[in-house]
Length: 180
Image 1 (cartoon, rainbow, N blue to C red):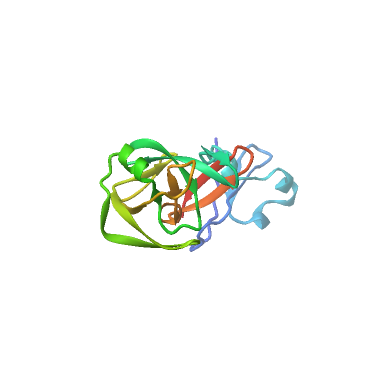
Image 2 (image 1 turned 90 degrees about the horizontal axis):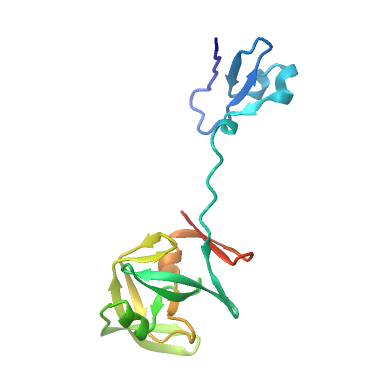
């Protein structure tokens, strides 16, 4: 017979729950390590020990290009496009060719004014329903359409990345996107 003794403090948000087995085989639970008899403290387990281990975050493969990383991105479910991760870019930028390949309509009126390292430029824009990277989606978004970078279809900016906690792992390289 399994007898449980459970002592939970009222009002505690995320307290640790401790488990130990007494000499007669009785399993005990408490939220205070001080309530575990001293002779059983070396064998105490937390309640989390009984839960399955947390699933590792999904690692999204990246391609290392020079000083940056390329991620595969789907726009409105189409693609993939190869965009450079750019935490310094406020908006996602697609090249005109990439916009054509995924079938989005580019608008030029009113133009978008961009402040770049080379000065101010005017560019087109498009409304997209979704941007998706590694199963993570965001949208609808207004993206800029302009030739942003040679060798890529554009830049993945903070309008997408800012919705997530972003981690780069150099051993792949991999990208981790976790909800905020």
